[in-house]
Amino acid sequence: MATLPDGTPLPGKLFVVEGIDGSGKSTQLDLLYKWLISSGYCVAFSEWNSSPLVRQTTKRGKKKHLLTPTTFCLIHAADFAHRHQQQIIPALKAGAIVLADRYIYTAFARDVARGVNPQWVREVYSFAVTPTVALYFRVPLEESLRRIMSGRPKLKYYEAGLDLGLSDDPYESYRIFQGRILREYERIVQEFNLSVIDASLPLVTQQEIVRNIIRPHLEGALRAEPNPWRNVLTAEGLSGRYLNSLTHEGENP
Image (cartoon, rainbow, N blue to C red; front, side, top):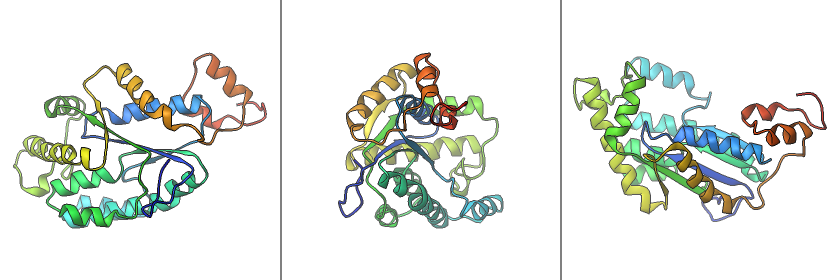
């Protein structure tokens, strides 16, 4: 189960995915989400840097290149704190499963790669719930770069780490920046007991490993009310996020 910083257990389960850009973590989380939903569990989803609270501030700061490494850290921390309070904690208290696409470990890797003090960043996020399981998708730097560059014709200023003065060339700056982030992730794997997944394996194999890690922690997780439509669709192998919209008690979907 997930636990508060003071050790208080919460009835829900918090499963987190982490990794550098191009690691495939979001794809694996989506597959996990669909499997859990089709299995009848109540699942909430939280994504890094998605709170409406600071969206306009972040957008303005990025557009005008106003963000220093410290302000970047604090804005992301405010975003996380809002989602933590409004999404994650309530769902865990209700006994639901929460899936997080990036968690505090993203800050520990990215902010430190930008030169922020590691201990200070950890203190900033010291209020965060300890996950039930944190998965780290390990991928070689060159493979991650190949995946990103093949589908992204232009890199954004902060995404490429151009604010750090690593290189005038966006792609070289991005390579150096991602290398820094990768090194920080490798440092925190043991510190926070992250479960490592080889992200160079086939997608299906990765998902099998993910489910085998997650499965023992599902006992006691909140399940949705039985739904005839869900049962029929699941039996036919049809599962996905749209199943959440099915009405209860046999109404039409």
